[in-house]
Amino acid sequence: MSASCVYLIKGGPGVGPGTIMVKLGRTLRRPEERLTQLQTGNPWPLHVLVEIRCGDAIREEWFLHRFLKACGYHHHQEWYSFPESLVQRLEARYGIKVEPVEREAPRA
Image 1 (cartoon, rainbow, N blue to C red):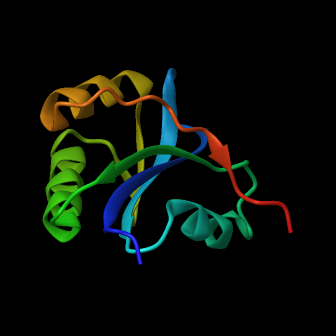
Image 2 (spheres, rainbow, N blue to C red; image 1 turned 120 degrees about the horizontal axis):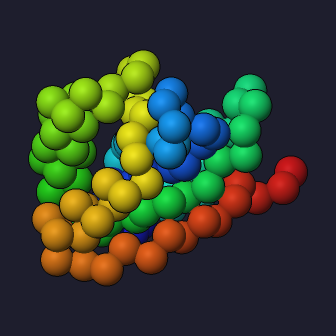
């Protein structure tokens, strides 16, 4: 089993101009496995946008949920509508260069 990670999965267009819908979550497995589950019934192709490997994924996921809600990006449950430029703030927080992964769900 791999180390836990926090992921952002990119969905369709967001609520406002220049925004995207993003699902925030964590998993002990590969994010692609979660992606496959989420794709069922979703009208937009989903892609893994960001994968953050960390020692305490529960804490990091909690922090990101609170941060995104405080910024007013919360849409519904674990889905957020935020500007794509927000990824730069993630880079600053984690000291990493986030390259969009853009992996699609495996075809059944």
